Length: 277
Image (cartoon, rainbow, N blue to C red):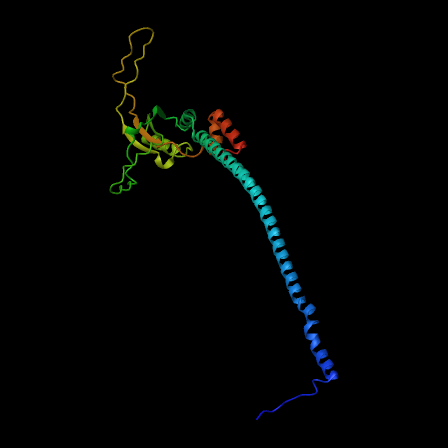
């Protein structure tokens, strides 16, 4: 019922020595080799931590440099903004000065002396025409031009103020005939001081025969003049408007009419470039 399994080889000395020699390397020699991966892992971890710390320090230094650069740029930007504000102020002042200069030059350029206008009208008066009066009509006496109807204002819109009249002139006088009046009108329409399309005859009537002035001869009584009658004259009224051509375009006419002061001012403004020639 019981079996005995006895291995007598294990009891032999030579077999024991071989068995002990085969099992010995597992205990003693394996310990030094098992520590190398651990050491390598620790070294790798230290290297990675060092790299991370170095990268963090590098990034911190870069951030500090960028913050310094940003502070410098902000300071430079503040300086540039201040300079830009000064430049804008200077530009606005220059623009205002140019506008004031242009406005002043425009005043000189739109002035036409009455003396030059009167001299021009007088030089164009025919020998058989006698001017009695030249006057500028006030606004309440200027007739309304019906040829160009004004547009009707829109409902609810405020009434626009009427523009000031532009130098309406009335010339009154006498002439020996209607032909002389017509000739005077045609000559006035050629004047550069007046608007030809606005120059027209508003009145031309044949007056009554006139008696001559009494003549006293040798200190006696004046001679009888009841039977002497002078031919009737044509009484006329011509209405015209001053031309709005700039004075810089009438320098020759102004100089010929002895308006040398205005001519000198306009020429000086042209030399400075304020008024275009």
